[in-house]
Image (tube, rainbow, N blue to C red; front, side, top):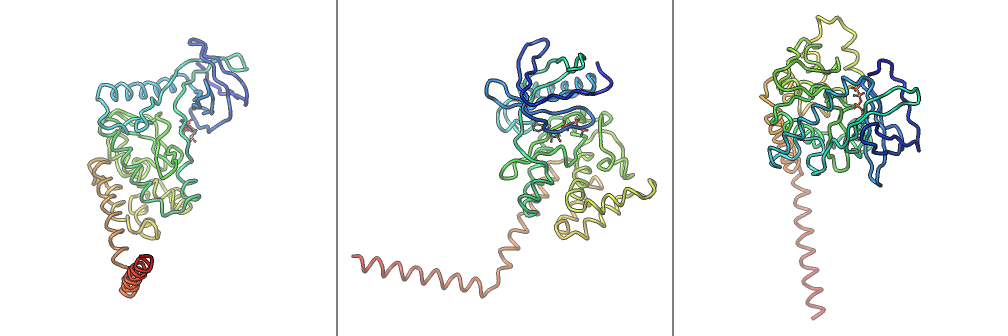
Length: 319
Ligand SMILES: Nc1ncnc2c1ncn2[C@@H]1O[C@H](COP(=O)(O)OP(=O)(O)OP(=O)(O)O)[C@@H](O)[C@H]1O
């Protein structure tokens, strides 16, 4: 519908859908990318996110994916609620689709989705600490696993497309790259792309997302060094360079073997990857527990006995 994208919605403005006449009040810009702008809007006292498309065709294919996923979710019952964006909450993700008139008199397509109250992955880790990385990683892998189980590949997995809410709850946004398994990936970002690193094709398979997940870990914890790797000759880019980074980073070292498997396509899908990640977390927790020095354990035991004796005497005194 449009080629140049000049839409600029201001706070307090009311947007009325051309066809359905639903009215939305604009609160603020949430984010923008190559495909459009996303605004926080309000209707009937509820908050939503409104994505206004730079290109009507691209936006429509994103909407088609969301509609296909919603249909699958309905017909498949509620066995894997988190397969869909917003699925675990039980609320639909895609709420409305319509066109609007911009102040330049042009028509723009938009869709309304559930507002995800969260911050990007990197913001979350810098606000809450890197110790959240294993849990958030696991939640993200589970989210991908649910999508893979429905025959979809997310495609454009990157830090900006993962929002994290309280307690490490993860939500994927921007389904512009979501592709049915077996097709060519519809949209990707170079640094997260398997083809870019000479590590495989751009055909949609679950391993493609796991590769991007591996790069995402590096982007979160070694962003500068990862960026440096992109300045070399394209034919020299390789998984070995990525693995070297993971081995040298303190937070990533414990998962470097896991990353090796993800980057080389050794996991069949994200469910297998998530299970291996979960086991790693579990083992580390156990190790940490058994790492408690003997003297500290002894001290804890003595304190417990002393506490028991004190309680006993207190109770006796009260009788
Ligand atoms: N449902 C939502 N709730 C809250 N914030 C959102 C939501 N959807 C998108 N955003 C915010 O808006 C930003 C841009 O959205 P989105 O990634 O869909 O745009 P895009 O144009 O497709 O981007 P890209 O160029 O990466 O493809 C996101 O990074 C996110 O911060």
